[in-house]
Image (tube, rainbow, N blue to C red; front, side):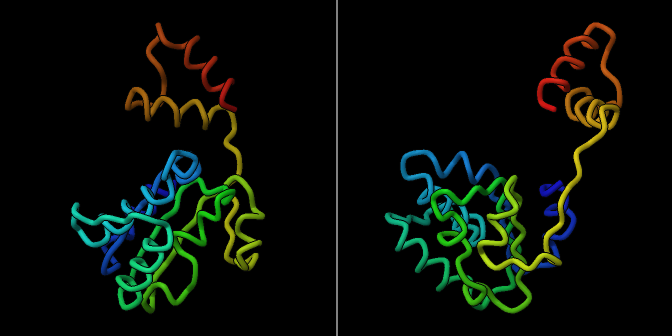
Length: 161
C-alpha cells in the first residue's frame, strides 16, 4: 500500500524517497548509516553521497532538506534504534508542505513521537479471499493461482495470515 501511495503522489513533491524495510535494515551493522546514505542519495539524485556516522547523517539531512518540499515514506518502522529520530527527527528538517508517511506494526511508535490519533490510519486485516487474491496478483499477475499451485498458495496465505 505504501509503495502504491508513493507512486501515486511522488510527482507532487520537489523530491521524494521511499525507504523500505527500515526495521530490518537498521538491525544490520551500520544499518542506520546505510538508511541515511540511501535517503540522501535518492533525494539528491547522486550516488557519491557518503555518510560516515549517524550524527553526520542527521546534520546532512537537516541541511539539505530544510528548504525542500519532501515526500518521505519510511516503511516498516519499529523504532527500537530511534529510527525516526535519525531519519526524520523534527518537522523543521523538511521544507513547508513536506509529508512523512510511516508504516509500522506498532501504533505506539507513532503516538510516542507525537503523531495525533486523527493522523493515524490503521489498515484492517484482509479477509481470506482478499489475501488469496492479493497474493495471486503479486505472484501470478492474475486473481487466482494455476491449478498445480493451489495447495501451495493456500498453505502460504494461511501461514502468513
